Every structure is written in C-alpha cells, then in structure tokens.
Amino acid sequence: MNFKVLSVAALLISTVCFSASSVAEKMPESPKQIKERIETNLTSLFTDAVKAAAVELDKDHEMAPFTILMKKDGTFGFLSLSDKNDGMSVDQQVASIRALLIDMASTRQIDATVQVMYANVSNKSGDSSQGLVFEIEHREGVSMMRFIPVSEIKDESGKKTGRLVFEMEKLSTGSKPQTVFAASIVQ
Image (cartoon, rainbow, N blue to C red; front, side):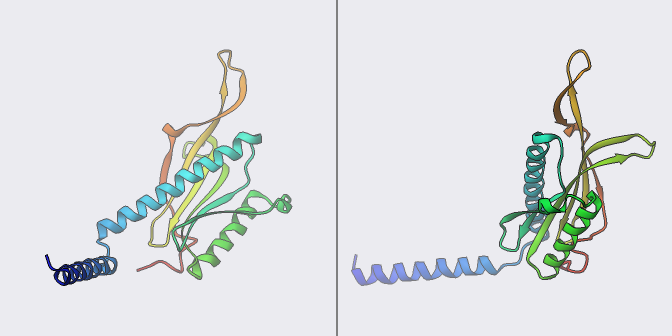
C-alpha cells in the first residue's frame, strides 16, 4: 500500500472520529439520562454523607451538622462550621451552613448538597426516635429528606454497650421544599 494513501486514510479516520466525539459532547441529554445522572450524583453524595456521619458518631456519639456537596466541576466537598461555634444551637448551625450553601448555589458554584444533622424526630402517633436527618437537594429540582434511626446496641442482658447502629431497614424518605437551590433551579 502506498504511504500517501495510508496517510490520507489515517487523516480521514481521525477527522471522522474527532467529529463524532465533538458531536457526542454537544448532544443534549435525554430525560432518562438526566434522571440517571441526578440519581447517581445524589446516591454518591448520600453514601458519602452516611459514611462521614458514622465516623463522627463513632468518636464520641456526638456530631455537629455538616454538608457534603457536589461542586460545579463534579468533585465533592465537605462543609462544616469551625469549633469556635460551640455556643450555637444545632438549628443555628444548620441555618448558618444553609445560608452559605444558598450563596454558593446562587453563584452556581455547586450542583447538589446533602446536609446532615443528628435530630430527635417524632412521628404522627407521637413516638420519637433519635437519628440522622439528611436534607438532599439537586440544582435540577430534586429535593428530599431522609431519616435513619440510630440506636445504641444492647447486650444479651439488655445493658447498653456504648456502640451505635444505624437502623437502615427503618430508613424513611419524604419530599421537602427546595431551600438551597430555590432561586436557582435549572428549568
């Protein structure tokens, strides 16, 4: 085979491949692809948040509110208040973190968040449970709240062992209004 023919063929193939990849990059996502991307992002954020909460609770059974967030470039970050905010209530800490997240969302620095706090939650019948509350939001409109009850493990005699367990089988999920991305939802 002639070298010139081979060079022209290689140039033609690389041009076609480059054009195909450029077109693929510019093609809009289908609704199914968007849904799958958002679900993948939020599942990863939620999983990281559960792991971070487990580490924090394992230390001394206490946990300050924090957020796992997805930055615009797709990387994850961790946000919490410094130790000098010890005098603030949990509600004040959550409100402060939320204000920072709203500011970051309004300047399009982040695409998704999972705020985590330890709380005492009561159901409709008045029974209360301690556990982790996860406020999950995505810029493209998804907004939900999850609750995982946390209890202390007891030995055979019913005495508390000092070890905590996440009761994943009792995980509950509900919708919530947008707060972080309320003013910046992609339409």
